[in-house]
Length: 164
Image 1 (cartoon, rainbow, N blue to C red):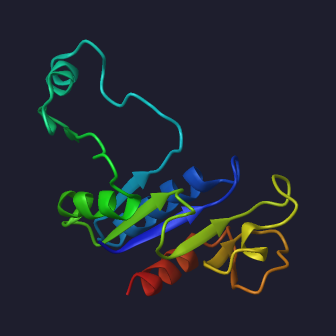
Image 2 (image 1 turned 90 degrees about the vertical axis):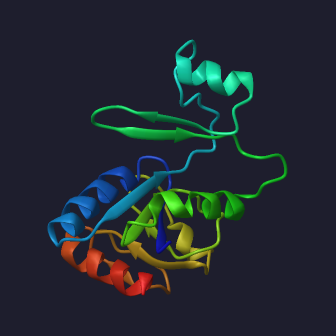
């Protein structure tokens, strides 16, 4: 899975950038997958529905096929780390040319930070050498390249280079 993490602080513009990138890259003919990482515990399935009841009964994985959408739910295995969970997702994203992960700054893999001076005084990249670039239209005091947020085509091209 060619996976790149788009990271940044809350309200830095991560979701907006991911959406812009998906639109741009898909217009170029690429198949782009996305994964939203969250540290919060959410019930992704609907309590009381059949699929939820299947999981509660102990199913190792539950799939839903509707006329327009497919979904698979499976619990994280005890002791399974994030890397192993991404590996398990690999087959579901095998048809994608690129996978953009929104968040998950602690995970290994290429990371690009979205930063706005109005949200945080300093970019995470100022102290995190694992961040390969900063996306911002503000002046950022970092050693990594700064890609202008207003140039989605440039950002997309650089991400494709990172994925290779």
